[in-house]
Image (cartoon, one colour):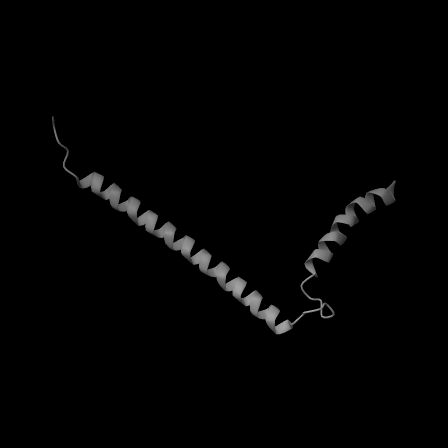
Length: 80
């Protein structure tokens, strides 16, 4: 019974370790460390640019909402 529990716990961990190590395969055909390093850098740069863009969009939306709120507070109210 203890072995069964151990295997059910260890099996997913082994699968995750294998999937984490699939980028470093020097004997794989077409493997080029410099190309892979460049791809990783480009991917990281793209992720950083997306995060910056999302942050900039949030800031613009926040500024827009602030301007609207200030406009609503200072706008004269018409009496009908």
